[in-house]
Length: 518
Image (cartoon, rainbow, N blue to C red; front, side):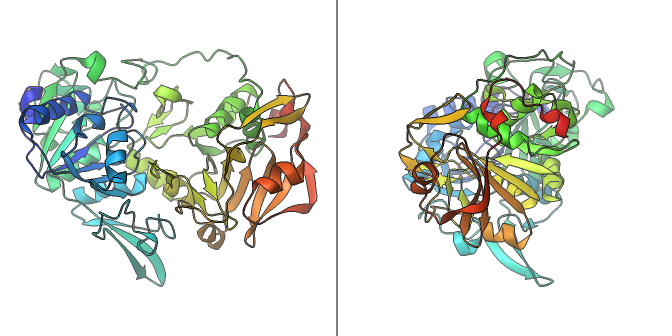
């Protein structure tokens, strides 16, 4: 192992290299190295024409992270689980300026592990009958992208997808401390995310591993149980010169010992989340929880389900998990997303997806953007945006009980909860339940074949798919079924004969008392 400057690290990358970068937002993202690589390109026009591999969304939705190496000409091919944190490459993909693939986050994180084991790809059922399936596009994002990186194969009479791995030339990863032998610890990080798998994969490919750290330590001074990346997998170490900007624990925090797991925090009773349509959806969703459930919450309204669980006094009765590898504790949203306080463990991201793919979750609460009558769902591609699938496909295809939560319409929708009823002041411009959708991120047919229990919980009603239509089983008080529900849906839908009103407690202030039903 050799300690080098950040400028020297930038010179280690050549034109056309395949580059793998660790990170989940800014957690374990080597921002200082990425900044130096971008600055070198501005000066020299190199490195250019690279292939970039990134499993999770890496950056701050602004000017940090992958953004730094996304200048036009730097990237030729982009293979990622998530576009939303990098508007530059998203725009280049939409403009057909680069080749781009969108694969499930868990598939990519495990592909690194497979490369480390000398394998050429990932064989899995994850992605079958979605846009990742070669029969539905093979994960290609635009017309410029032509090479097939996914095959559909049959083994033992069952279908699988085989995702071909991309060999890695250079890894850019991050830890906290490096000793003189190159052993890396992560004591001030929110977790390890995918850094170890990337390092091992790159060495198996004969590539170079460059690690950004905050501290250097004497040889053998990092305790064995704290070494998460042994020095044999490290070629170069860069000590961050501006860590408060370029070595942040999360987007919002430079370093918080509670996020690193160094201390527990006393969870004070927070002010209740405002009683609005979002909370009404989350309250109805929280009624599906059972004591001991292991749960995943998506972004947006699903995050409010966790807040409702705390308000109702059932937070300690369930175990929340995050795709980043965090198990237990209280997940933090917004600019801390991907981290938690009081967590019981921080697994490598690939192992968390092993748990998900093995059916370890009791239930998951996920969002939706477009839905058709067959319960196909799109959350990844719509209009002029490529959000990417993230961990959505891994989770939605592997979990028995899925609750998709969101408003019935979008775009200018204005609602309030008043007098125990839902009041729609202005209807949304965009319908979300459609006759057809742009891409399939979740396959209703796949879910039906595998006996999944699928429920849609919206501001106005609760629905379940059946035989190509949505069956409405509960309706919110104050809602006109014909005007406010059926007229706002393009796909086939009907009201069940035994349809009931949604629990009135959902639309009233104060605790619902659902702890008594656990």
